Every structure is written in C-alpha cells, then in structure tokens.
Amino acid sequence: MVARVNTVSFQGVDVQPVDVQVQISNGLPAFNIVGLPDKAVAESKERVRAALHALGLSLPPKRLTVNLAPADLSKEGSHYDLPIALGLLAAMEVISKEELAEYVVLGELALDSTITRVAGVLPAAMHAAAVGHRLICPKACGGEAVWAGDIEILAARDLLQLINHIKGTQVMAQPEALIEDQNPHKGPDLADVKGQESAKRALEVAAAGGHNLLMIGPPGSGKSMLASCMPGILPPLSPKEALEVSIIHSLAGTLPQGGLLRTRPFRDPHHSASLPALVGGGHKVKPGEISLAHNGVLFLDELPEFARGTLESMRQPLESGETLIARANQHVRYPANFQLVGAMNPCRCGYLGDPDQECTKAPRCGGDYQSKISGPMMDRIDLQVEVPAVSVADLNNDTRAEPSETVAVRIAKVRDIQLQRFAALGVSGQILTNAQANAKALDDIAVMEDEAKDLLNKAMDSAKLSARGYYRILRVARTIADMSAIKSGEVPEKIRKIDIAEALSYRRTTHK
Ligand SMILES: Nc1ncnc2c1ncn2[C@@H]1O[C@H](COP(=O)(O)OP(=O)(O)O)[C@@H](O)[C@H]1O
Ligand SMILES: [Mg+2]
Image 1 (cartoon, rainbow, N blue to C red):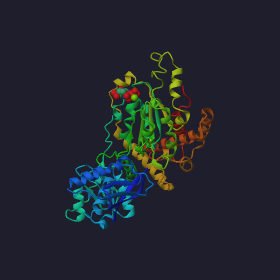
Image 2 (cartoon, rainbow, N blue to C red; image 1 turned 45 degrees about the horizontal axis):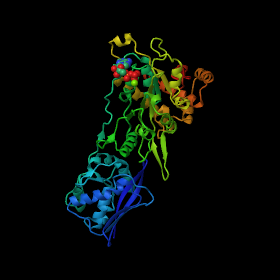
Image 3 (tube, rainbow, N blue to C red; image 1 turned 60 degrees about the vertical axis):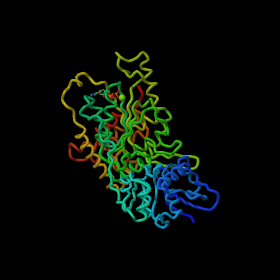
C-alpha cells in the first residue's frame, strides 16, 4: 500500500510537482528517504518522528520507505517535512488517502508538531491553483498564499489541527490576505537635502523613466542620502508587478509577515557582498540581490569597492532583465529587472579636483580608482552625475526644498504617460518604462526633431558613443520630454533638441 502526497520543488521561479510516496512494508524496522534529498530533507525523518510522537503516535516497527519522485531531481529545503508526515499518517491509515490527493502540501515541522514557515508558499499556491488542487501550508504563510487566486487553503498551526480538519472534526477558516509593508519609507526626505539641485533633477529623471544612475562626488556631499530618498519618490507596484516581486521574496524567505509586497524593493547590499549573494546561486540556489531588487532599485554605495568579478557579473542581467544560473544538473532563472543606482567618490582620498584637499597622487589616482568600473559597465549607466560638496550658502539656506511627496506625484504622472504609450503600442506586457524600451519600440516612441538628430549625431562622433550609448541617450531624452509634459500639459510627440542636450549632459564620456 503506497500513500501519495503532492508537493513541489522550486527551480528558480519555476515550480515543479513532486510526488511523495510512502510505503510501509514488513521487514527489519528502518526509515529511509530516497529521491536525491539534500541534508535538510534527509534530516526531516527525525523531525517527523518527533512530531508524530508529540501527538502520541509512534511509527510502526516496520520498513518505512519515502520516495520523492521524480527521483533524478534534487530536493532542497525543509518544506518536505509536512508532506512526508501526512504521507506516513495516510499509510498508517490515520487519515484518508483519497482526501490527501486533492492537496499540494508544504511546511516544516517542529519537534512539538507545530508547522513552521517555509519559503516559496506563494509560487506553490499559484501552482496548486493552476492544476486545480487545494493547498496545505503553515499558518504563518496563509496571508501570502491567498494571493494566488481562487483556491482553498488550509493554513494550519500544528499537525493536530490539520488532522482534525481533514477528519472533519474541527474546521479551519480560509486565511486572510495580508499586505506586507516591507519598505515603509523611513529614509530621509528630499526636503532635507540642501542644495544639489542638479543631482536632484538627475534623481528625478532616473526615477521617472527607471534609468540607471551613478553619482560621483567627494565624501559627505549627500550621495548616499540622495539615493536613500529614492524609495520615497517611486510609485507603488502595480498588482502584476507586486505578484512577480512577492514570488521572488517568497522563494528567498524574505516576506517576514507573510503578505504581498506593495512597495517597490530598494536593496542596498554592502560592498563586501559575494557574487552569489548579488546575482544569485551558490550552494543552495537562491535569488540574489539583483533579483530581490526586481521591479525596484539596487543601490550600490561605494561602487568601486565591490569586487570586480561581482560587478561584471551584473552586466548581462542589466541588459536582459533576468539572471540564468547554470549548475551541473540544472539551469535556474530568476527575473532581475532592476534599476541600478550607484554612488562613488572620484578617487581613493575622495577630493580629486579640490586643490586644497586632494592628495599628492592626484590626478592619477582618480583614473586608477574610476577605472575599477569597466567601460562596458559604465556604458550601461544612463545618467552619470557629479555631486559636488555642499556650499556653506546652501547649508545655511533655511528655505525648505521640495518634499519627496510632491516629487512622487510628478513621477507617478510621468510613469502613467509611459504606461499609456506602451499600452497603445501593444507592448505593455513587456515594457513599462522608457528604460525598458527596446530598439524596436524606440523607433516608434523616440522620433527626433531634425535639430535634435543633428545634435545627437555630432555627439556620437565627438564623444565616440557606442550604439548602446546612443539608444540609452534616446531613452533618457524620451523621459525628459515626458517630464516636460507635467508643466506644459502636453506630451511632446517628437524629442526636442533640449531633451537630447540634457540627456547628453548626464553622460561622462571619459574618465578624468
Ligand atoms: N546636501 C546635503 N544636505 C543636507 N545634509 C547633508 C547633505 N550632504 C550631506 N549631508 C549630511 O551628511 C551626512 C553624510 O552624507 P552622505 O550622503 O552619507 O554623504 P556621501 O555618501 O556623499 O559621502 C548626511 O547624513 C547628512 O546629514
Ligand atoms: Mg556615502
């Protein structure tokens, strides 16, 4: 007699069904789990044994075999505890086998039979909904599972509650949908940043069109401060984006309250971050920072201090919007459509160009320091702005600058203009911001006036821009043109010379 329970295995953001088969047969007492379990899965038998013991049930002194099929797919994680326990209970005829067949089950067991939270409940619930099954998950994850749509969910606190529900003696209610406020904007407000008008303008352009931004300036000029204003001016996620982001965070186990994320992610890893931490992968395949920043911002402070290989590994995801991790026996894919914001000093001492403070190695040290960021990486950064030291006059100026809230309203309007344009083009499924527009879409949306074209052509020659640089300037110019519509009330159909000129001003072509 074999009892079967449906569960899942995660391959990147893809979910694969796994069949847990449990057999109790005669023979010397043994408890084996087969089907490429990793250490956490193999240890699950101790937790299952203890959890059943806590209910006053002991495993029969027979030969217990648990097979996780398909056998050639490696199984990682602790969410196999609950399906294995339910499979055993069915094989022991404590609960009915037929009833179990309608569920997808995942959860970890504590020794006292409490069901504890696991990663990946949201994608598992979406899989269950797609195949027409119901879901059994930990109580702590019920709030995220509900977002999978019209599906019946049993979010159980412990094994006893679950058994009682399945036997019909105590019925559990459907969990309530939760919204997670993971990034409530606690950072500084733009109104607190004194001076730095041109950097603020660049920040607004970057936020409005989703463009990559690099701020270069001496220490203490407010670069980190400006970057941390970013979450406060970005629009909230659309429902579709929220689901995509939440799936990744669910897989990474970073939904602490177990609800849907509505705020745009803002990730700021330290420069000691390793390559797997940044792009994903490693011993256990997990989404990296660039995927956790999907549909949001990845802020890399002190950019040249990041290990070279780590930075270069972001080049491909920056273009394709996803990361593909190849391992010996599997390829996993995570979305990574992020906006890169970087900050750096112009040189190691930080005062390059300031005759009073720069060190004796200037200007050579500046070249050395800045060349830590390779040409191809720089080529992918649309806006490169200088953030000079704040002047005393600016610091003493008591008039309050524009608050983040006002800027956020403008940015939301510019994003709306873009959404409508891409919807009209019929590409709103893939393109939401000007920064995401591909060359083909740009042909339609970024037609230039003749004067503008002349200026860009000249700049191409004199500044030796790459083809990528050309298109990136067009995208930024389109955003600048869209932003002008907030004041004039009319979106310029063609890109004007002033738009191109401003976009060009944000591109430093040579290292000093
Ligand atoms: N433009 C500014 N307006 C107001 N305060 C500033 C400004 N620039 C720097 N500061 C103050 O200096 C601190 C350090 O700034 P920070 O953004 O970390 O500098 P950077 O990253 O450029 O080295 C901030 O927390 C803030 O208190
Ligand atoms: Mg800083």
